[in-house]
Image (cartoon, rainbow, N blue to C red; front, top):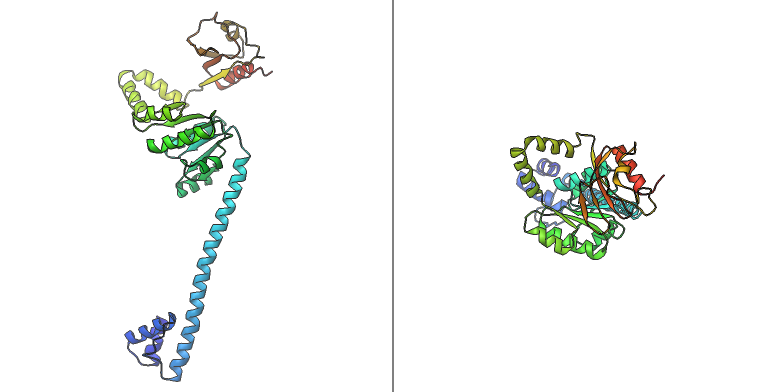
Length: 315
């Protein structure tokens, strides 16, 4: 605009010619078919050249500086994140942070568990990182992404991607990298459950099927449905817990009735999974608890903690 107006006033050219010469000057094309003839026009052209070259150099340097700075900051953040992840073990890996994955993360954090998220959406990953969560940007179906979050040291993995094909890839890759890893996968379609099990998932959850069952329960048994809703939404001060009886535990060799008579253990033992794999539902009081048995119980957090400490043999 400055060049067009200047050439128009100094040289008396039309606005079109003035704009044409200005563009020639700034782009350094310089066809030479319409040069300024007066000294004032030449001096003005020199001014436009200097301002134009300086302006272009400033714009280019600013862009390059911004790109380099962003790359450096991203690289430093990733290195810092990798160092942080390398220090954790016995953690949980959440692949995908959509509605299902976000709820998994929320429940794990509520249980005071350590979790690392793999998210492919950079914007979503940035939002989670601002909340203080450990998030690695990457494709969860790739080995390098799973290695970067310590799959070889993890306790469990939840495949929560929005389609079954990607979840199958995640399960296959994770199972190949860690044979002892507990893997729980989300199944979008009912047909995907069998494929995920064959791929190596320990357990498969189909949210649509569960939602259908809950709808039917709400229609036919509303009071039961209200209890389940209150329990799952933590409106009741009750929790489910599982604890394995260690070899040195004081609970080993005792009958269930003597365990439940303890003042500090105010829980309900729902079932006992024996060491041989058999499950005893609603076990009677004369059931003998042995080392290696797993107690499935419901109760208040403090009572469940006391039972867990006794089962582990902790004082």
